[in-house]
Length: 247
Image (cartoon, rainbow, N blue to C red; front, side, top):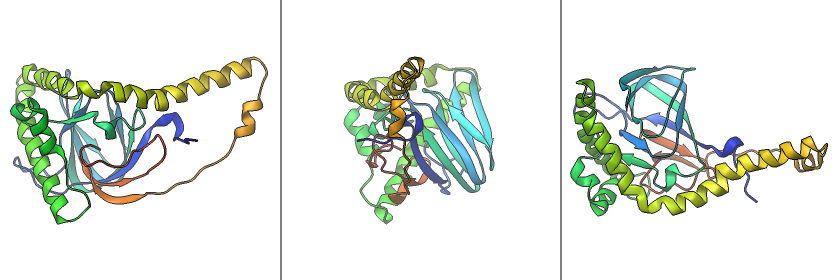
């Protein structure tokens, strides 16, 4: 039986990348999620998250105790200010690991699914070869991100909207698989609450006989995620094994 976290959310911990990009900013790989909201809970250090959305460009300060979150379609880029560490909460139990995230690669890569996959996929493991590939991937995403940001700051949302459309087309074939993950995760969690409310309304507390507690710890440390080095939890229905493409 699956025992997901409350609300069937995903969980990981990130230490933001310290690599300097072409614009002199140290940090992660810009991307968006198509159907999943994401939250950062800052646990240490300082930094920022840059976001692109229909309401413009923002640079949100991240310091211990801060919480920032983004709705689907918001491009976000984590910025390292000094030992930045965050806990990440992801909506929809596993969809981000199933390809819900799309990097801000240049348009020619977004238009070619095979080229996109080749640029996005990392070699297995956590060694120097994987690190080099993760850095190349970050640099490609920054290359595509900077023109989007420049245009949006200038009042032109066209390139940003075109990126959103290209991202949606790129993942379209995955939607049937995502529906199954959603049904088994977030939807099932909401339906369980509905059944419990119905039982309580009938004066039936029998479902409380199943009450228990669980504990877990990271099952992989130091993986190369989008925004930084990632500690992962292989909880059923919560965080899928890291596939080297997303997360």
